[in-house]
Amino acid sequence: MNTALKRIIFFALIIGLWESGSRFGLWTEVVLPSPTSVFQALFTGIADQTLIIDLFASFKRLFIGLGISLVIGTSIGVLLAKSKTADDTLGSLLLAFQSVPSIVWLPLAIMWFGLNEKAVIFVVILGGTFVMALNIRMGIKNVSPLFLKAAQTMGSRGLDLFIRVIFPASIPYVVTGSRLAWAFAWRALMAGELLSTGPGLGYTLRYASDFGDMSLVIAVMIIIGVIGAIVDQLIFQRIEKSVIKRWGLES
Image (cartoon, rainbow, N blue to C red):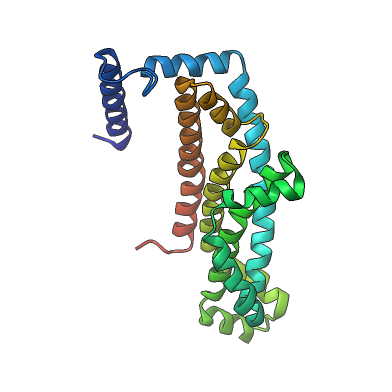
């Protein structure tokens, strides 16, 4: 039995038990709506395009925030790897900030930018920047000294050494950092949108919760989870596997 078939059977079993529990009255629709109600909410949201608009709004913020975080995170990571002073000072600050959940920054972001899109994008940027910077730092620091000595023996120095040897050798860490940055940024986006004025998936989640529409709440949660799984498994995992194979890192 292949993996896809196992997953189909597993999810079919979960949905079947869920639907059966609802029909036999083991819990009320307010506590846990049935799959039928959730599907109806999902269908209605797609048909009247409210969920489509939310999805586009969320992705717009994500692409802007994640793109900026990858650029800033890569720049900071290179700085930390090449400067011991920066690593000893800024590096310790980044380690501390990495443990702070992105949503904690939202009150400050609202004070600085107002309750608008900029505040949400700021939180998304913070969500991806720290993890990207630390992975780039680790990737550059872990480049084999043999590669560096061999390149230097052939006359490669400075920027040429970085472009031709150091950065290519740290690509696996770049991919891992990008994958983690996406995951952190996606979570930060949903957290930020919960307190935003919409549109967005997080905003609709809070709106549905305020009005007791649990079917729509679960429908939005399913969309968030499915998008996260699709992007991670169909994009980042494939890129990571390709890089691992290309760089000969398979065990």
